[in-house]
Length: 233
Image (cartoon, rainbow, N blue to C red):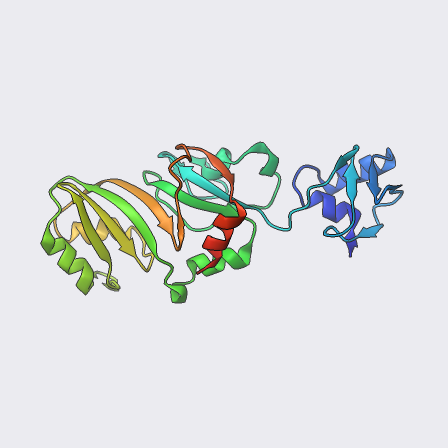
């Protein structure tokens, strides 16, 4: 059981002070009974809570999928650049959400935005070795030498990378599969072969793949099936 003002405020649409004002105006009810005090407790999973006559669709956590465009930073706030949170639908803007992982400002593709700290930890924890797949375009042709080197483990100035998959999908394009997430890792790995990454797009995290119908810049909730795939880490 939790305080009614905390339950409603946790959903992001109202602050706790807003909820108290609504209660004073008799606009909050639990199981059909008008709430008279913010101290009233309820079970958000079993009780029917209404606010201004509308049933509260309670969600303990939210899980959003974003097809990140270029030009946005993977942060909750930034003084100089737009953040990925600016692409989140207004209905979720009041929640304490954050990007689970990072993509460079010029990198596009799949991002997860959530308020579930445990899930974010599982995605990011080095020991989990969560697989991530990227489409990469280079300024020079992709070679079999690069593929062999990725499979053996490219040596960077902060140590040898774990083996990575490199599938050649075009003269200048490759699909890369990583099991770790070092700073600018793909760019640095290709840099060891004198190649510059000109396009980098994340296609998948774990078992969750970016759907073809999610437009660039679009952000939406994960379906139940997609959430199960993400949780299979």
